[in-house]
Length: 66
Image (cartoon, rainbow, N blue to C red; front, side, top):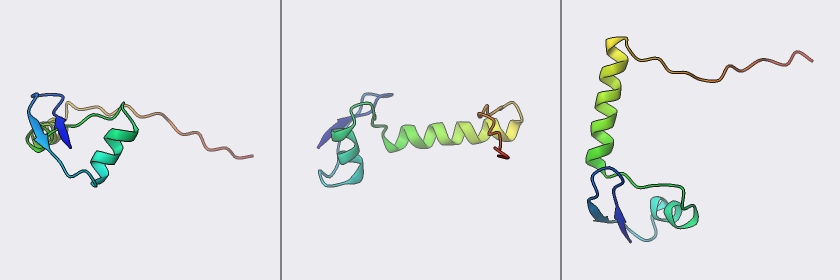
């Protein structure tokens, strides 16, 4: 299966039977990102977390004491 990275527009070939290929076929909202772009984003995110300027806003889970 031929796929295109959403960030750098590089075209790659992945195995048709892989989990990623199945996810892309069955759910069009899922996008493909090449390994280089994924690694670059991971490194920059970890650097931002280490700098202390990174705030992760998650929804607060209220416990139901019913």
